Structure formats: structure tokens, C-alpha cells
Amino acid sequence: MSVVRIPPQLRGEVGGAREVPAEGDTVRDLLDDLMDRFPALRPQLVEDDEIAPFVNVYVEGEDVRTLDGLDTSVDQGSTVILLPAMAGGI
Amino acid sequence: MPSYRELLQQVKSEIDELDVTQARGVLDAPDRPLVVDVREPDEWTEGRIPGAIHIPRGNLESRIEQAAPDRAQPILLYCAAGNRSAFAAKSLEELGYENVTSLAGGYTDWKRSGLPTELPRTLDGEKRQRYSRHVLIPEVGEEGQLKLLDSRVLLLGAGGLGSPAALYLAAAGVGRLGIVDDDRVDASNLQRQVMHSTGRLGDWKAESAKRTLEELNPDVEVVPYIERLTSENVERILADGWDVIVDGADNFPTRYLINDAAVWHDIPLVHGSIYRFEGQATVFKPGAGPCYRCLFPQPPPPELAPSCAEGGVLGVLPGIVGSLQASEALKLCLGIGEPLVGRLLLFDALATEFSEVKLRRDPACPVCGDSPTITEYVDYVEFCSGRPARA
Image (cartoon, rainbow over all chains, first blue to last red; front, side, top):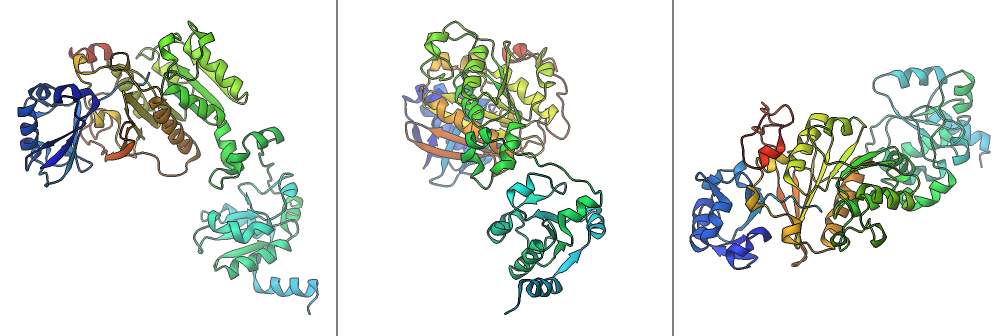
């Protein structure tokens, strides 16, 4: 079991929760578990079976794109951060 | 008991001295020593050897380690005639400095021989008082404050992030602030945009910012640009010369545009963004870390990218994130500390929690990567509405 931090832009899709537990030994399995339960997340996170280019996924503070992408392994108890691009400054 | 003359003679026999001709040679050599003027402040202000730093004799032991942390660093000390610097050299040797020399004949001989001197720049009395809390910090000091007064920072947006960032940069005495904003002050801005006020409703934000900032600190020149940053005007605005850019824009086209421009002009970009209770800040420093496109290769489709206007924002949140941006910008101007390069700082005001994730440069980045594919400004409106980019 790992903890996925849901960014404020996506909390509507998960019923408002700031953190959601998810199962999976890889980022792919973990996101599948999450998106099975919250299908509205899918278009926000995945594009053509890859992590969408406008979102970053961090496992223990490391960008999975710099590791093995969706195949990056996730240890039990890890913190996973989802981070979509955010433009606001006004 | 030795007399002063006897003691001086003894000390001089124990240290290494250079006469002005030898000193001139050493200073022209590649492995130039650190030149330390140990005279009193009133002597220093009347002229110095070019490039010297000033540590009065009375503060030498307590301050030298900060100026020369490495005991092997060659140091040339001078005073007016070479006597105080002889005692100073002896003290530094006792502190373990291995390569210390004293200028025989001192500044008097140096000047009499027609060698170059310079008048040190100093803060006048008024500035010394205004910036006294900066001058007291060893990492800033008078030199640092003079550096800030010479610095030029461009701010994109005079809104939520731009307000605190610009206020603190102006208060700090950053000599020139450029403000790019094409919007007017609206009542809904005043919950967070603390640079503006009720009496300015309907005014251009860039003009309102100029009035507020110049009233706060008349040392600061504010250059307003009442326009939206576009591929048409970005080169003209950057040609005015900026050391650091603070990005407080409210839209993706501007953020990608300024990122590309900052990479091509080699200007550090201090990034901040906010949404509801959460904010992010980082520094994109060309050559030293990733750029915005390494972090987010593409903007989200418009339907997935709410702005503050749609999503709302806690009024104080830009105050926190914009102040972090000001702090990073000041560090970059001064060349001190560890800026947020390669690190994205995340702040959650509801949980009162800071966290950090690592950012790495993407060798395949289309702008700052090893083989860039974007080499001129993209038509960002088309780009962001999801139609093909014109690269």
C-alpha cells in the first residue's frame, strides 16, 4: 500500500480527498488501481499508455520519467505525488 | 620589555614583505593573492588598491576566515606605511595562514609610485541607514547592497505573485524593476494583490505598481510595460537588460514564452504558481539545471487547466509564494546561498506543509536539451489551444 497525493486540480475526481491509498508494485499498477476506482482521473494522467506530458509523477521525490516511467517500481509505504502543470499567478 | 620600534623590527624579520614593484608583479600574475586593506574606514574611503577588500586591523582575526576560508590562499596585506600590515601578517600566520605577505611602504608608497588606485564605492549616509539591516548581514554587507542597487529584475505580472515579489525587491533596493502587465486593477484583485489599492481601481496595474514601489523606495527605478508578453515584444523587453526574471504569469503561453527566452538569453527564471491553498516555486537557471519545458514538456489541454479566476486562491497564498520568489531573486542577484535550482518546492497552506521534489534537466528537452528542436519563438496561442505548433 502506498499513499498518492492528489493535487487540488484533481480532487474533484476523487471526492475531495487530499491523499488516497493505492496498491501496486509499479507506477503502472498503482495508477491502474487508482484509475479503476476513480475513472475520471484517466484522461488527466495518461495519454497513449504513457504518463501525459502535462503531468509529473514523483515516487519518493523522484520524477519517474527520469527512472523507468510507468515501469518504475514502488516500494510499500512510498509517497507518490501527482503534479499537473499549474499556471496561476494572478 | 621591547620598545615599539624593537617589536616592529622583530615582527618584520619574521614575516614576508614585498615592495611595491614586487607587489605589482604578484598582482598581475595569474595566481593573484587576495588583497586585504587593514586600514581604518576613513582611510579606505579615500582610495584603495584596485580589487582590495577591506577588513580593518581590529576585525582581522574575526573576519578573515569568511573572506579566506582556505588557509593556503595567498594573501597580501597593506596599510598606510606597512607597519600595521606587518603585525596583521604575523597574526594571520598565527592563525595558520601559510602564504601571507605584507606590502612594505604600504598604500603611501604604492600611490607615490604612480600605481593605479581606485575610490571604493560606498553607500551614502541615507542609504547606509535605509539598508542597515542588510549591511549588518555578513553575506550581504555594503558590497552586496551596492550589488542589489546595480541589479535589474524583470517581473512578469503585477498580480498575486508579482505584488509581494515586487514590494520586497523594491524595499531591498534592487535598482531597477521592470513590470510587464496589460491588465487594470479590478475589485476582485484586492483580496491578494497588495501592491494595489481601492483608490486605484481601473488604473493600469503596471502604473499602479510603479507608484507604490517608487513611493516605498525612491532608489528604485520602475519600468512599466503595459502590454502582454508576446513573441512580438519579448526581444524588445529583454533588450532592456535584466539579471533575473520573476515569473508570476497567469497563463501557459506566457510561461512557455518566457522560459524559452530565458534559456536563449541565459537569464535565471524564478518560477512560482498558485492554486487555491497550494503553491509551487523553483528556479530555472540555464546551464545549471532544468527549464520549464523539462518539467512540463507540454501545457495541459485548456479544459484541464483551470486558472485562478476559475479555481480561486487563498489571498495570502501568493504572499507566501511570491515572497519565496523575491528571496530567490535576491540570492541570485547577490550570488549567495543555494537557490532552488533542480528542486521544486511545494507548499500546502491547509496542511501547513512544505515538500520538495527533484527536477532534472531533460537531455531531450526541445529548448535546453542536447539537440534543441525549438530554436525560435513558437506561436503560443495555437500551441496552447492544442493545434500543431509552428516551431
